[in-house]
Image (cartoon, rainbow, N blue to C red; front, top):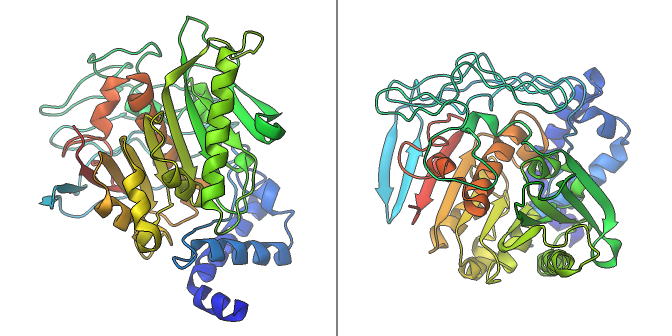
Length: 431
């Protein structure tokens, strides 16, 4: 039976193994991003990881998995700007699909990655749409210690486009300020730190601003679950979120196939714990958190885990990255009660892609469905991981911090992500 299962999973394993070859080649050239971790991994261990991940990606097991690592240090890989085909704007059963056309602009800085120590430089400047898009000119996001230097234009609209210097549009206000779209790839205004071996049973890592609530702000909470065979250390997005003011409670459990219900309960346990810390007078989090702004978020099996708890009334939003329930457990989609973001690769490219598509079709709540031009490992490697991190950060800032200018990233046929050729977007019930 095990041998038969491996045979059925062979295409997924080949996808992951081929990606692994690319990673290992990069490791030989660079001690950054992936090399430091995977260069020390034996061929046998990598094959074992492939088997675990492929098992988790099977629709029969209703799980998906991944391999790889992305630790920002040393030299990064040069990103590529991609062009779309003709622009489409069609409504299908209450859903709208947007595909960037030739000349459609990109989110500035997202497509290019050249490393310093956390340094990110956008391609050769982003493209500009004729009808009003997003331009960073030759703008760059340059990290010394994760700092952000805007281009010469911030967000500049063409005909009918919005103009908003370094702060984006003037619409809306947030206790955490407003961040321009092209700045989301860089670190936010806080210095991130983490607390290891914390939370229930000392089995959580907490990513948070080093100084909590310096101006009286209350930090939103994000519960996180990793994908199969990985732990929170594999995801640079988590400390990145802390620089933007979020407190991330991440379980250290390394998921294995078929355990998404228990993993979902671990997310809930972490959220319960941090809320108790907010009420405990001798806790560093005492009075520093916003119990009314909570998200659950996960990748691959972590995305499945998030779907199992999406009916928790305390959740303001959920984010599901390359993790779709699909036909095997499609009824879980009905757990959604709040706006959700599905960020996945395409069917046939991301091994969770088809399940993500089915989940979007079954959803009745507001959903942003972004399909990136990458495979299941996209979140773990640049430049694709940067695209996902930027979009997820923007979504959470909009949903949890009332950063209203970032609404334009996700809503309408001219949304910023809609104009980025690295994404194809569908929307449902968003306004």
